[in-house]
Length: 218
Length: 218
DNA sequence: ATACATTTTTAGACTTCTCTAAAAATCATT
DNA sequence: AATGATTTTTAGAGAAGTCTAAAAATGTAT
Image (tube, rainbow over the protein chains, first blue to last red):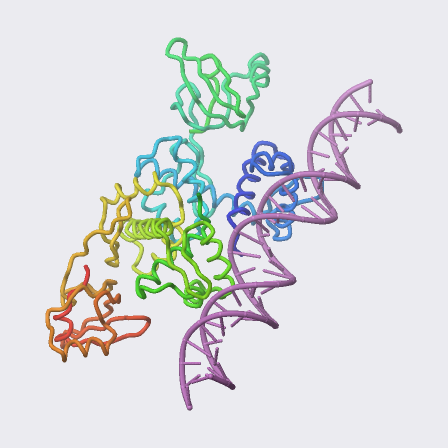
């Protein structure tokens, strides 16, 4: 059962949105993400539901079924493999890569993906640090690193903390950081080793004291 | 002005069909090539005409405009560059390559194509011997080789002959070979060096005496 | 040059994905 | 729990590309 370009995009974004919020993805959230209207989302979601790719109950949001999830993960796999190719072999810069990979990820040929994976040397992480699932959809164990030591430009997520005082915990909560929160490391000051991260479109400063106590995925 | 996947396919096939027959491409011929119905072709051709990509007069067939031709040639460029990549770097076999390249050719990013071209070392011919136009749409001068010496599997075309007797000329004519005729070299017998070529879906045998007197594009 | 066959076009309809506008359901606040 | 705000769904319609069936144009033979 082949999916259209559009259907694949819906599945991919449902996957990404439901990673954060364990609940069903709301119609509006999807509409915003896909730059379309809520009514279009409702229509498409019904179609995906008829194909058993999502679970959908009116007004309750959507989640992916097993099948839907497999497709979504496979698209992420393709996207990240192409990013590796574009950046490491074609010399694309970090930012330019995304739009092109966005198109390439919808090319459907198992043969192509497997050969590309081999050509690239079976990479486990893309150039932004995103983990690349294998052909069965299994993500690699993320390596853990202190935020303190992470390379600039990496997209990552909170894997753990090494300080458990109430003060620290509530500080993190206030910043919007908890286990699993995803963000991008933008800057690190040479002066005081404080870091700047991007989280949900917002830029946040973290002191070195905070950064050194957070484990993140590498 | 962006073209859809479908529009690009129409342009590409109009280009390929009009290379043979210097006249306008007929609706039916296009329909057959695109595995669609004549009525669909008429509709699409009107649309392309409105966009000034083809010249179209009712019942007179279509030809490409300058703009349409540029787009068609660019798609061929992309198709052949991807074929080089798939075959030389990913290790695809000669036949499997085509369908995948058919999808990749529609990815629109000048940046991507230029970088791919550079990565591949600015190849002038694809693995089947097809000439690859440069970024300005200019095809390379085809090298000439005797059919006698051409590699098996090459698609090529008649560039000239080295024997001009009436007997030879009328023999060629009967076989359907003339200047510019395109075909694929399929087999060469070890026994008598006769060759088997594929021309318009038909398989034809040529003796060594014939093959050695035909120049073809390499 | 007339009659028949073939090709091409038109007309109307269907699918996929989208939108706007309005109705229905849910949520939030007091 | 009632009101108002927000979210979501429905209804109807539009653009792109396709199809079938029928009409119009062209080509071909004698």
